[in-house]
Length: 153
Image: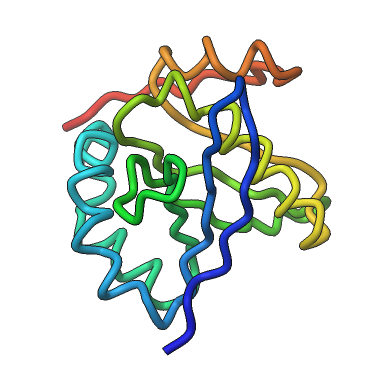
């Protein structure tokens, strides 16, 4: 059984590891990912369920990432991304991000996702999220392009 590839990134004297979970490990990894992502999935206002996110990742459509602190094998955070091919550009979209100590590892995750997106030929990264996400993104040269408004029935 192959171990997932882990890319260590140092941030503020603390070592975090951001790991892309291979598709063949998703079912096993979901046991740990689900509780880390539950709150973020609930904030989708019914667009997603835990089961639908797991299915997207297991199919290879989306990617599951884990954040680890040091050599600890238990993830402290999880993210879900997807490449979106628009008519004029390819973008890595961050769908969900959650876990413990987000303030400590958010920039590490963004840096790793940016590298991954570039390696895969993407033109950029996008994220949808609650307003609190902006406090992380604005510090890293992100633009706030638009806000989504909705009316639920």
